[in-house]
Length: 369
Image (tube, rainbow, N blue to C red):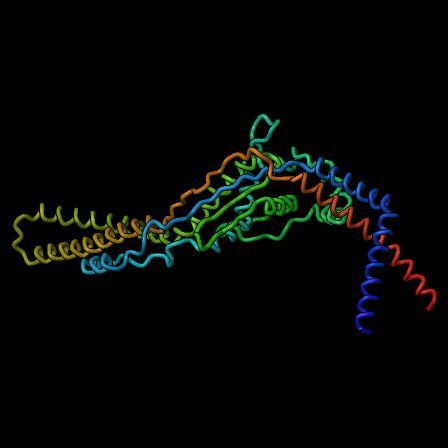
């Protein structure tokens, strides 16, 4: 019986607290309305003055042209004295390769020099020139830069004359990038999105820019550049081997032709060889010819085999979703921005009203103790 009375008292206290809080909020409705309206107008300002952005994307699948030349074909070739070789390990390009390419300095510098079509410009201009001389960030971006981003502006001004650390570029080369280029690369990294689906085997690229046509052009450039880098990486070893075999083949071909001509000339000049010295000379030339022909023939086989290997190692890229100029903006979502600011304003106003009550109670308790 006592427990039931306690429960009833507790429920009455809770209901009294809820009624008291509701009454207090109703009395402070003007304050809540004012704060909510302030945040609503702030959200409206952000939604209106945030620049439009357009996102273009593409999806492609890298495919290997053939499997390893082993199995029955390899067995038949070995019987003929031809070694088809194993080639480069792995038929497909590793999914981990694409992010490494996108984050490499040479790749990013080439994107900075990509020519883009910008509204109001008579001719195409590069990405770097656009953001250094043409792009207008807007009122909101300027306010953000010189308020929340002021510490970063001060730090960048102190480093304006410095040059970033050198990084390894192409073979036997060093690339040095300026502070401006480094800032643009950081910005480009945020605008360029790469998604690699290792299970399905497709790669997606998307670029977000203030210009619709420019976003499509930069996406297409990134796609072609990424495929070219991946192609170069995949076929580098087999191409180097092909180059080496071609050089040896050319050398041995010249040597074989020289020995062939020397043997033919000796036979023409000595139709009836009756001396032992002449027969020995002919035998030596014939032996040199047979050896040169054997080496030359073997290199010809290896050359043909390596040319097939290069073709096999060269991947094909099937485009599933070609690049198209976006017709609708991807950002900002003005309705969502306005709703978020409205919600934040309402929640914050409730917190301020209720916080005042508990702050007064805390001060009173503090004074009594």
